[in-house]
Image (cartoon, rainbow, N blue to C red; front, side, top):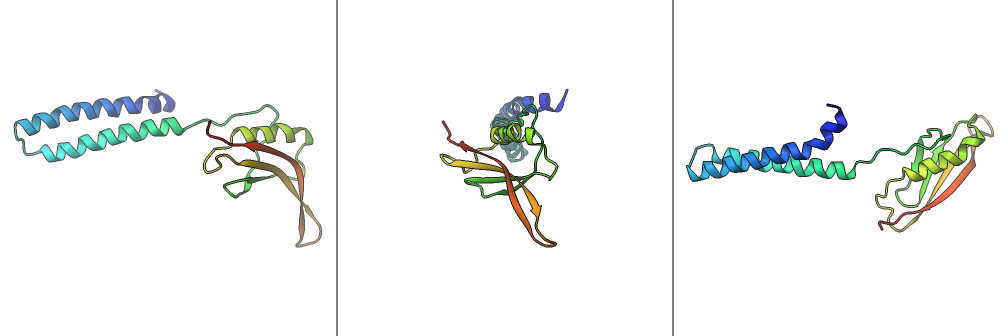
Length: 147
């Protein structure tokens, strides 16, 4: 079983375990067993694991790959309306558009609801020994909404 198959099955596994433990808990309260409060905690914990693993699966999404795009590290993200990715000086010009599209497609919503997010690719041009100037290679804008 691969990791992703296991990930898809964890809510069901923990849910069935929680239901089984719930039935054992009911029986332990009916017959007044000494471990009834311990089994109650295990039941609640397994149901909580089931719900949290289901929530994780709902929030997990794989990154989208665009042909011709290159990986660029994001060096600035203000969390609202601006993202800047850093390109090397030898970054190919034909990869700018696909890379901007890939960055835009993989943008997580987060706290950006209803805002226009500018995504920029920049490189640094060295002016003197300790001073460099940013050069914008490409820019795109994406509107984020929860609809």
